[in-house]
Image (cartoon, rainbow, N blue to C red; front, side, top):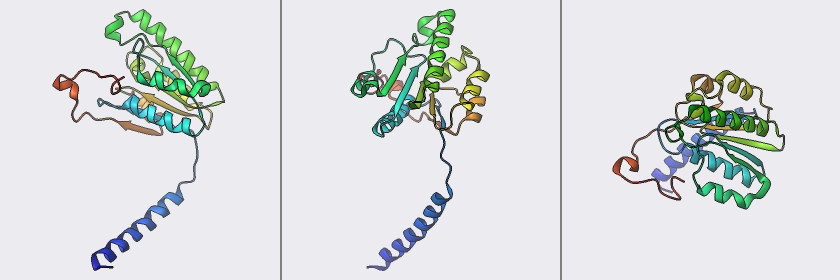
Length: 200
């Protein structure tokens, strides 16, 4: 073994010891409130990746889409393979600039939240994804305090993922994990349209 290889091995052994000690200190297991927010692409996509991981572990998953309505998305096609392991509800009516009807948007958000509460109460479901809930909260279609209170009162083993831009500070404060997707570069700015299999 060369001196360079020996130095590298010694460095990695020390790093492993530090890492192992840090991991050993983490002993809490609990349901997480996870928020994916920010201006960058990938918030819902990250939630679908987590959903796939959970399904692979045999969990039942609940999904409520608050805004996306009429879109024919790849993820909706893919979930059919999992049968009743997924309880999926697309209840939005499109983005607010498409509906242009505040009363209709409010009614859709309230209906979607009622479904979310039902899924959160279903003890057979381990993961609930509330896609674009942040948009409904941003426009005050739902009572933020009531939503946060429901999340805080969730059963101990329930994981919840909330997606959408502009997460409210109260939701961020209540969350266990918040990831902000940054926008470094986006093909849309260069005139590339939303494409099947990438955006939907």
